Image 1 (tube, helix red, strand yellow):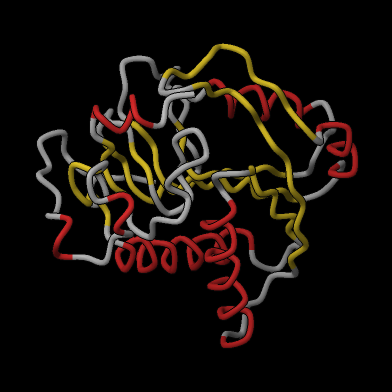
Image 2 (cartoon, rainbow, N blue to C red):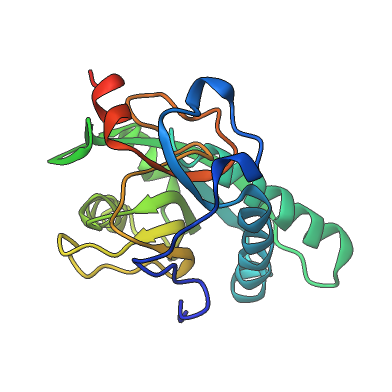
Length: 216
């Protein structure tokens, strides 16, 4: 899936905060809006269509990677449900949840902890769609895919709303990508910084002062 039309360039100026509704308590913490909420929704709708086209007709277990992925997961599933109700081709869906912990402050740590991994054995022989909010180095997803492969699912596809262009990347690319984004620290639309900014609708670039302000 080429991302040439959804790649946000490194020199992207974004949008001024005062063009959008941003919670007042975050106004001093953000540099700019880089992906407005409406654009996220439009792109998610198209991803849903692509997924149903490729995986439709088979029962899918949609596996949500918590916590960040929950907003994207809910919106993506809403669009898939709408397609199920309004088209000739539909896909039976069940959902499951997993939590991966690989973060502390703004540096991705090398340790990946899988919470809920014991239940992966239930995915044997299933068609699995992993739903993630952001792929940065790709190592977290590679760890999860390695764990999943031991359970022998029938098929595994990965959709990530964002993929970060970073020299730290392992080279891993998801099957479906919403936007390819610069190597900046992004928050909003459920992307957090130490649990803050999940209540921000747009995806924004965090400024340096905020990194210090919300540091654990």
